[in-house]
Length: 155
Image (cartoon, rainbow, N blue to C red):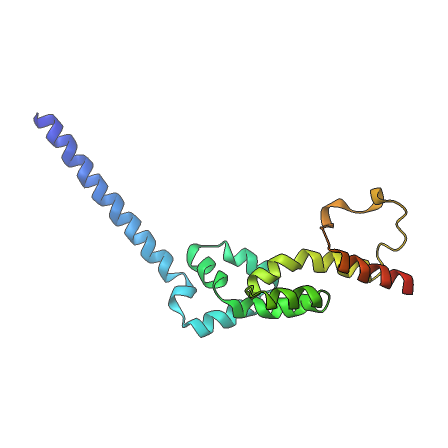
């Protein structure tokens, strides 16, 4: 019986030691996390300097960064307006539907890259569908294909 109580006491002491180590680690992580230390305006200013890829990478760094980036529509708006140069109709339709800037960017970013390549004439000399790069292609609606065909006819 005494052996069991000693074992239980040893477990409790080690549990307390682990909890204090975890607490200390959390405090250190919190001190190194500028999102939790700086005023929101400064944090937004820092994140607003990132390109789309860097912003997405930053959002998977930790939970607090993810929460801040995901829920800050103002960070996504400039990137959406850049994509709008190629996908104006799509972006405007999504805005009218009430989507957030972040969701609008997610819905249209890949399409804007593909559409830009088509409109710039990159695929003008392709003879067959086999020659198209599969990885960057994405589904597009009839209106988008109409814009692409008009651009091809003007070349």
